[in-house]
Image (cartoon, rainbow, N blue to C red; front, side, top):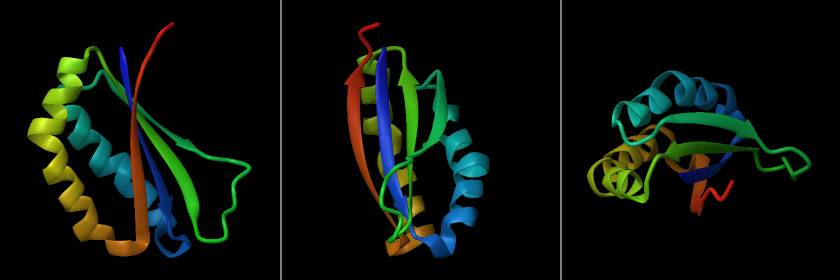
Length: 101
C-alpha cells in the first residue's frame, strides 16, 4: 500500500471555499482516476495558524504502479487546475510513503 500525502497551507481568506472545493470537486476528480482506493482530509493541529490553516490530504494506492500512473497521467492537469483556481493563496508539498502495517 502506498500513501500519497499532500499537505497544504491555505490562506484564511479562502479557507472555507478551499475546503468545500477539495471535498466536492478535487477529491472526486482524483479518485475518479482509479489510481487510489480512497482519500481523507485531515486538519493539522498545534501548528502556527498565523498565515493560514494547514490540511493534509491522504490518498491510498494499492500499489506503486497505480501511484506512478496517477503522477504520469493525471497529476499535472489537476495541479494546474488548483493553481489556476487558488493562485498564491495556497502552498503545498507532497510526500509518498509505503504502508508497513
